[in-house]
Image (tube, rainbow, N blue to C red; front, side, top):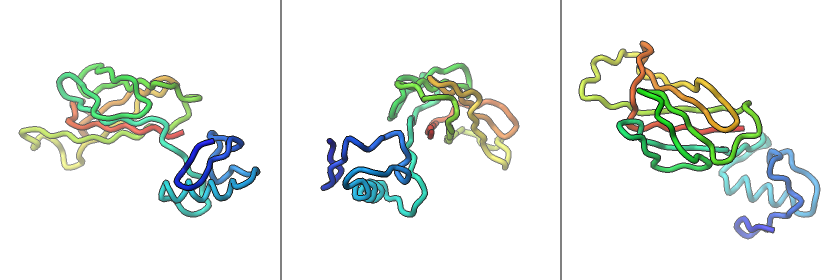
Length: 150
């Protein structure tokens, strides 16, 4: 058993099941309500947790600032990175969200459309990402953040 606030989580609750779909067992509705409150979630839609996330410096020698379920970052070249998971995803059908911040001494060369970042390859143990100018030129961001949901 585990404790969430003043509520005891029962061992019969399956963590892989979306919270709104869990049913059965004594006190499960209380656990679901307490969990949703703790997550600041409301309504009947399922709650899915972030399975991996990372915030890192993409310039020079890449360095992880903070992360969860990320073992390392590989710098494949300018604006091209691989995020390696500590624990693999159950399959490659996850959503990888990529955001970043590029700061340059002369930003006049960046078109009004701004920056685009992409997830270029998903595998169970890693995701490859790119960070590019609107014209497709790869850039090294000062801040790059990746979050994975499944």
